[in-house]
Image 1 (cartoon, rainbow, N blue to C red):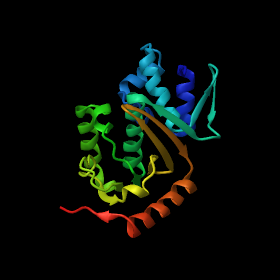
Image 2 (image 1 turned 120 degrees about the vertical axis):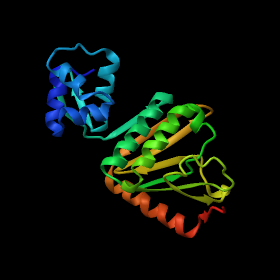
Image 3 (image 1 turned 45 degrees about the horizontal axis):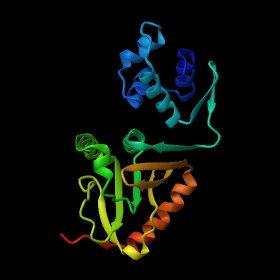
Length: 216
């Protein structure tokens, strides 16, 4: 967990103001200010949210005083809370960076069940609210009915025999490999712009040459 001194130093390194940190951590600017000036003593859950926000920005904390930019930029999300954290990062990247979001073999019967209908609907609403900031295309197995991102993304079908078990989600500079087993999930994510761009090129070829449009 980061100390107050590390929170201030990490913000300075990234050039974030208190409002930006609060937004990325899901907290209030007032709350961040009170933590930094010592008025409030944050609990472990609050510090975890702040730590996760910095982790997404590739800040690594060392001991009680040090920090540095992560040299190997990778991360693993696990379970329902990890999945939500992953989608929070997708949202912030789509909002702040935009660009192309590509998902290959993304549909799963556990997707909405794991997140909960209410949480997913809130995520869908916030993505729809910023859909002018990005384009999103999704390739799913032919015959898939649960098109959960249809309000903010475009779908195409892919032949079942050509789809691997691996699910891949690319946004910003991130390439994410998603593995679902029953109602569990593990997402291994690498931040590497050239790799993300290479996948987009391959995705576009599959989208244009193999995938078929949905029939209304």
